[in-house]
Length: 368
Image 1 (cartoon, rainbow, N blue to C red):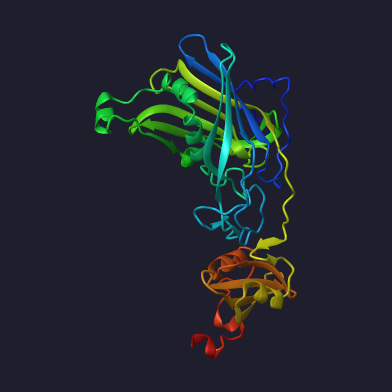
Image 2 (tube, rainbow, N blue to C red):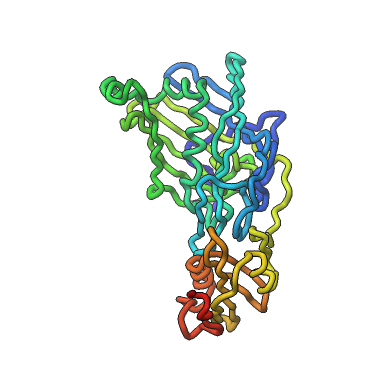
């Protein structure tokens, strides 16, 4: 199904702009750039702006990723939150999801020629894998939105459009205005094919509300596609529409008109991190973890295939990990629960650690 979202007139590409096709294998890279055209209307003549968000340089890698089933879309540096993401089928995505970066924001006013450029310290977020284009749609939008609000000129344009908070709320908040964006994922629209400067892509609308001191200030919605390069600096946001809750004449629109991919090296999909690679032997797996081999389970698959689950007791802080081996070669590694879900969603017997599947029990001296 092809549909042009209602109410959208896609701006023309700038003469010197280019749009690279979406690439699920491309990672964050130096030179990534997304170009928006912004139109702000406050009841008078609309003001139009050119907004560029770019990643000038990658930070130095802090460590290799751990247990990444794929590294698509990710900056390969340590994360500050050490969280494990899983997809809806239980597949572990990676042990890192966020990384500190410095985005360069350049804003130019078409009417006055005023131009500003500033660097904004923020956090790079992306999914390494999405089952559908609307998987976890809120992922990263908050970081994008608040990064843009740190640019004073953009904030000034927004203040002219939003409904201001009451004087009492400002006084009660210590003479400050606190801004919060609430996304309404349960109200998102169905995914449709949309004609964009990047070609025909699947996309959906995600509505949201901007609050100032917990008072409704701006109704908005985001048109979102895959979170893939070259749209990683914008988290796949193709368009932002916002309007004053009581005055539809006060509006702001931001629309992608160009997106360019920087320099990148294609990810190694066999790299699971921690010195592990898909296809290594069991002995190499244990040696790479510096651990001790323990219980082994053999689990049947729906298609008659089997997988050996090899437990390894590892030094702190890793603890007990499980490698999934097919035909004697490593295909996946993670904590026991995540490996279990990974297999069950792929047709293997549920509850893979049942006693009838044990082929090598835990050694008695393991409990000493």
